[in-house]
Length: 104
Image (tube, rainbow, N blue to C red; front, side, top):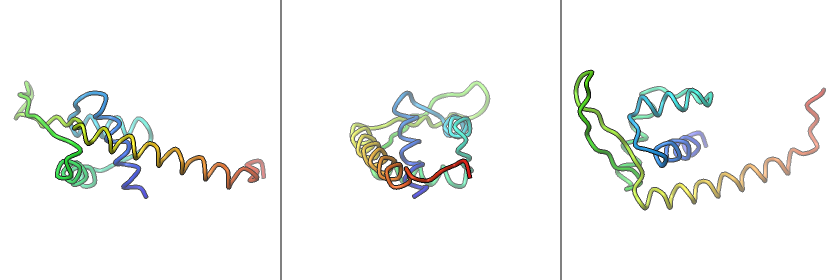
């Protein structure tokens, strides 16, 4: 389940603008989703191999060139599908837990 959520979050981040992996991790961290490099790099590679992401190399003033990821057209479609699935899941969980009191 977490992997699916991370896919949704990563695709959402890079659909806004091309992003370097450390920028993606910072944005996830700001949203209180802590992700390690050992998790994000394989996920980015898998999404790229599935045709949902592509990358371009950009020169860096602070070292070697960097890969910046962005969504492909099929990645945008997949993102919309993930978002719809997420919204349905949130609605179902909220519905099934509506009688739980948090004041106990």
